[in-house]
Image (cartoon, helix red, strand yellow):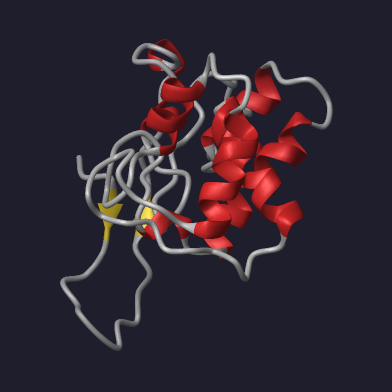
Length: 164
């Protein structure tokens, strides 16, 4: 059976599509947390498949950071993760950087992996965001982001280097 019941309509449609599918408990966590397999921005969010479903209720979509915070993160980590992704969205970083893979610039996970053992990475990357630059990840230059507050740059870089 299809998981939506709707009319073939493109505009001025009188009926909203209704989602009628659900994730059975036996499938929960079978392929990892689906929230981690979707982007944390844009209209599509993953559904956490590591949290138990509330009886008789639809499972609400959550960001991967929120799902991880709910399961295992210490208090306050969810707020930091939420602020990091919010700043990246607000400042347009996600237009050029994917969460895991290169779009125009490197993915945030690629940056984290490259600098995970570099003690000076936080300071250098803050300067790179503020002043721009090129050559490290290829020929396309990263424009200067001098209009972003230093505190926000520090939060974004910390979020990237810690993996959210």
